[in-house]
Length: 67
Picture: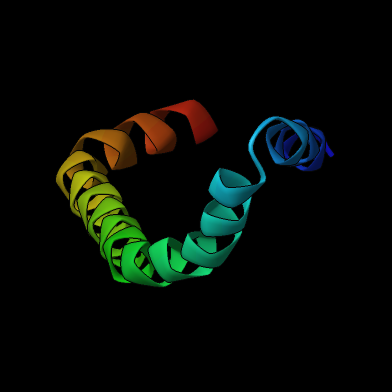
């Protein structure tokens, strides 16, 4: 909702800039999409690797807690 209000304000102040922003937004979103997907993939891989590294430490603690 806030983005819409800001765009309306920009449209009132300078409509050519608002129209250019409206046209460029989907293009920028499409260009950024692979980078966002890559970032999520790297985050999941790092979290998985961290879990695998910490597994030998956590397992004995879990076993001690359960006993």
